[in-house]
Image (cartoon, rainbow, N blue to C red; front, side, top):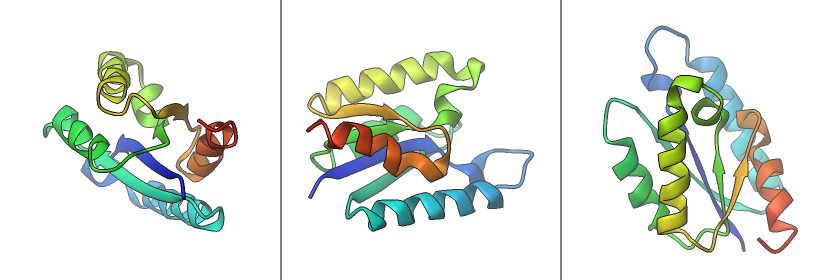
Length: 120
């Protein structure tokens, strides 16, 4: 069974907004992985902790066929440098994994499937 790691921002740790809608979308996204029979681990980080260390540790926990990087990291322009660090962490710690990008927490499985179907 293919294993996927989803890397994103922890919605409960972002100041000033309600995390519940994003948490609900993440739950729906997790269910989609289950529907497709894909094992998925989540690494949700807080920027004020040690996000790079947390991601590096998660990447070495299993042999991942694909790493999905969430839009909160990828599309928020002030996080461009952090996004680059995440890409390079994947290259360093999971060099055999395909890298995919979701457009919402609900379509993580679709993002991973684009690469898993190609044999990553």
